[in-house]
Amino acid sequence: MDLAQLTYPDVVTLAVPFFVAAILIEMTWIFIANRGGRYEVRDAMTSLAMGVGNVASGTLLGFVAFGFFMWLWRITPLDLGTSWWVIALCFVLDDLRYYWVHRFGHRVRWVWASHVNHHSSQHYNLTTALRQTWTGTFTFMMIVRAPLVLMGFHPAMILFVGGLNLIYQFWIHTEAIGKMPRWVEAVMNTPSHHRVHHGRNPRYLDANYAGVFIIWDRMFGTFVPELEDERPDYGLVHNIGTFNPLRVAFHEWVAIFRDWTQPGVTWRDRFLYAVMPPGWRHDGTGGGSDALKARYVEANPDTAGTPGLEPGRLGSDRRRPL
Amino acid sequence: MPLWLLGTIVVVGLIAVWIASRFYGYDEPLTLDEEAAKREFIADNPGLVPEEVRLAATGQSALIHAGGRLHVLWVMGQDVATHVLDAPQIIPTNSGLVLTLRDFAAPRVKLTLAPEEAATWTALIEDAA
Image 1 (cartoon, each protein chain N blue to C red):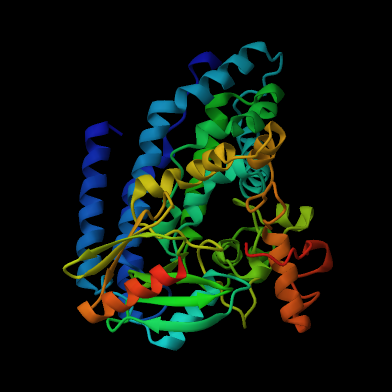
Image 2: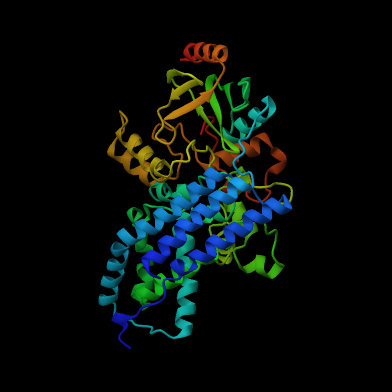
């Protein structure tokens, strides 16, 4: 087989009718059952507009990542072929890649600037899943996929399994499903695990970065279970006040630019504004999720050591507004 | 999938979701009382405690003193947003006030206020500046 011509179905595009149908079913279920989540028309339309923009930006800029992967493919001596076990292995390793890119997306502000829009909804429903970035190309996180290509996985296969990963993550953006059977919760990312990831409660910050397999969070120490007595409060630590998709897409990039151009910052500060976690300030007045957790534990000492608030997750409390 | 078909599905889907949202009443705005405004403010501003809350008669916005600064809270659909007021430009309108903020995400906040309320809020915001 000529691997240069290898193609796979564009599964995300093929899933669009399913996305639409599932959203309408979830909306109707919430209306009839009067539970299982919330919808707000402008929030939902903003999320869908972000989804459309994501597809458009992928169409316009996708050649950058694909071109980079094809260049790597030409220089690598390895070729694992296209058998089913290679595709399955590629899926698992690409999910590991997703975990780390997602973790960078929360801990490196340059990447957060792209990812923040996904967390900018105060709702958690199937439309939230489609609230995707328009600026992912500019994070250069395609580099994290380079090892897969160099190991001999064909770029088309990598993009194919990446599409499957994205589709898997659609259904977990719901409050309509409680907890899954224990073995599923142990291995897979589920609505419960991902609700935690979208929560802005201090204990839920910077947790559960998984795409498909929650085992990565368990392995790397970022897993936090959803507690029965603490429902996630969705959105950003400090929410943005807009439904305008353009502002949703670019607000954090603008914030970085403003931080760079403020008086008195050095080139080192500018670099750190891009690579430090969100909330970092050059004058020491900032504080990220670690400081927020520390402050929460100090105000609620009985929560110390409970999930998400273990000593290793707490930073220093700088006593200044975040 | 051909682009024309994908485009058609997307457009039909957007319209269907919009119609269903309106039909199911998912466009009803949140109305706050003072306690709810405090609760929402605290959730959006970890570490700050509201010292004084002035709720608009509509229940759609509030001025809140916290941490030695004045903040505005306004309803966005079924949720709220908040922002510290750092000498905003205040523009009177027929329905209340528009505040301009130094924030790319929320550069203008429209507040629906009765005329007397608008005058009081203007004075409070100017005093805080």
